[in-house]
Image (cartoon, rainbow, N blue to C red; front, side, top):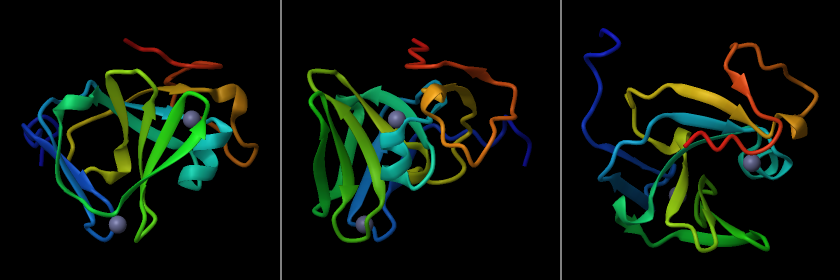
Amino acid sequence: MSGSGNKRETLSGGCLCGGVRFLLAERPDGVVTCHCGQCRRFHGHIGAYITVPRDTVIFDADETLTWYRSSDFAERGFCGRCGSSLFWKGDGKSEIEIAAGSLDQPTGLTTLCHGYVEDKADYYEITDGLKQFPGSSEVE
Ligand SMILES: [Zn+2]
Ligand SMILES: [Zn+2]
């Protein structure tokens, strides 16, 4: 198991119960965390996301996929059976954010940076030395 040798061509993922399963036709650049209050409640801690074009997500199963309108400009997707937090989808955006923890291992991905650290909860510190953005990271 050497770092670069286990990079998989195609990433796949899904929820805890298997009601939602997907393949990604495109590899994302990496993982960006989100420390905002909405992600905290949705995920139970920080959010960690990959971002890919919506039309590159191929669903093998989505019968339990449920969408919750979490703000004026976005919906969050989760499994209505097992409760896994899965997606963030901004209105009118061509991309979708997928919870990195829903991906099957190994992903070969690394974490790039931290977003919305201004909203961070008080019970932990960010100590990995990666770049921190007060608001949106917008790494692209
Ligand atoms: Zn599920
Ligand atoms: Zn967030």
